[in-house]
Length: 213
Image 1 (cartoon, rainbow, N blue to C red):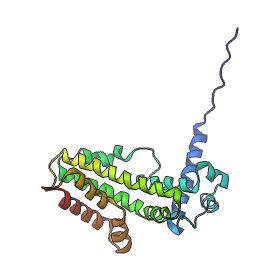
Image 2: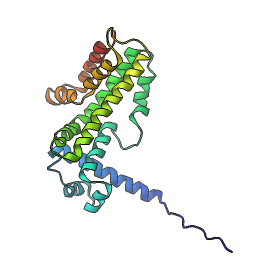
Image 3: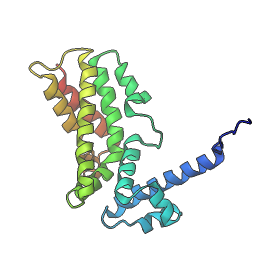
Image 4: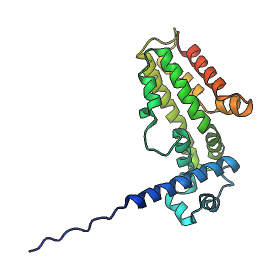
């Protein structure tokens, strides 16, 4: 009795790379349009035209709400690599900093970079979440993820030294969560015209003053 070999799934690195480029182009197109004209005014047709693909190809990547999430994730990361922020070299420099102040200052610059990429799409999400029920949960998750990130940073900092006298871990995390909100960048850089360097320096000084002895 002869063996029947199961059909092997054919995979092509070239085809996979092309599909990934198309997906990334769609996410970038969605990000640009959401920021330019808002969530409600942006259509799948417009995203398809901007990405130079068909409408079904856009839907294959996701619905409009799913595309906003993907755009948000890409803005936070600064790229399309599926590497968690906590495992990226810039954050690992924070973890490996020799003392708590250098850890905070390193994190401030890391966080300022995220805010620079993320503040505009975060504002789109904030506004859309009030009228699009499918985005209300994404807004809630986004806020919770920032709080989790703040707690992780405070854990790193307290392993290297004490907090400001009278400041407990939960309150320190709340303060950092507030400072990490992209609104700070949106106002100081977007509205008041601060440079990135000025913002990053203020960011670091403020975090150190409020959290460390």
